[in-house]
Amino acid sequence: MPREQGRKVVASNRKARHDYAILDTYEAGMVLTGTEVKSLRAGRSSLVDAFGHENNGEIFLHGMHIPEYTQGTWTNHEPRRVRKLLLKRAEIHKLLGKLREDGLTLVPLSVYFNNGYAKVELGLAKGKKSYDKRQDLANRDAQREINKAMGRRSKGMD
Image (cartoon, rainbow, N blue to C red; front, side, top):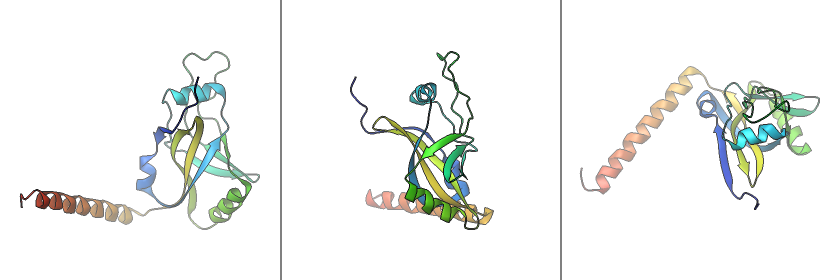
């Protein structure tokens, strides 16, 4: 069977981009069991309430939900188990230095397969205040109106 090519997104965390200002992104591999990979390939995963955390100089992903594989037997996995992330040592040191700053956290933005390997995109994030969220919504609405007006003008309707 030929190896998969390209990038296939399994799950994305759209709420994270609403709740946090993403300062930097990282790509990390995950240590998974066989039934977890099969469940991910079926497109079943949730990143709601997931976050990255440091333990003994390593980064772990907490709260990510991968449901049990339906054809799995006694070898099935725990759906919300803690999963180790695979990053280079220099990236881990850089991340840990930034995470020790005030108010920064590590949130997963998406889970995908890149050339057959399961990867997670992590965002170094700072929490937004409610007025920041309202400002972002207002900016997005204004940009949408501008694009509509430009589209109408280019079609000669205005």
